[in-house]
Image (tube, rainbow, N blue to C red; front, side, top):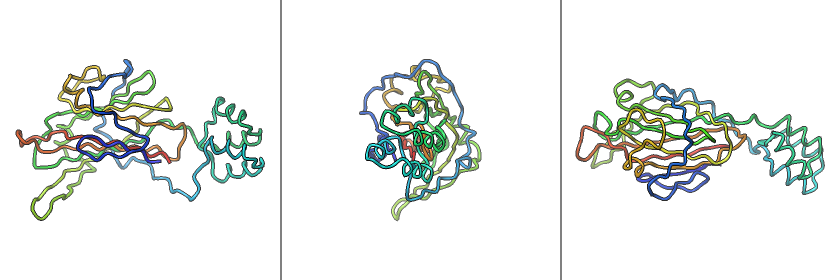
Length: 270
């Protein structure tokens, strides 16, 4: 299931990932933090996309529905064996299935063939710089992820990134017959560990401050421009791929600098 959230200058799509209404950001993020500089990420590290079949793995709800619809035990077990199960195979999950009427053989099949629980997401970061500039007006991009009682902080030093040759960098021609326009595109990717399942909040913000470790340190102006997303993180899925795209454009006044324009965040869990 594809979940989209588009912000500001970028198009807005609906889905599981949704954007809060524009307002000054309230900061519910936990006080304990862990920070990671993502400049060393390499998009070639992303895992191979799962080759989908016509039938996706069963879910807890589907197993319970088949049980309550009167499908015999052997049929349900065979479907789980053939398709696997994106199920909660924890003690609580098995208890819920048992209460829904699942037999011991079905519970054993779920326990054996359930997909491995997710331990995090693979994040692909794409940065687009439009126009002929040399540096970014806001020198740092931050990505805060709420994870239970922990706030995970990902930072990107743009002057360092722009001042070097990157392994995964391309020039994209977005010009037309009337106007030439070249976009410098840089991609980075890496893992984002998550320990809690369910809803998560993500905050994306551009800042001139190189030492931010928590959203509470943002200035009032930075909070007003920050972009807040939410996504539902499943216990198990065939893939856990999220994409963060950030756009920069040449500043109208300081033409030698790029100015942060907005971001887009989306996840795919199939």
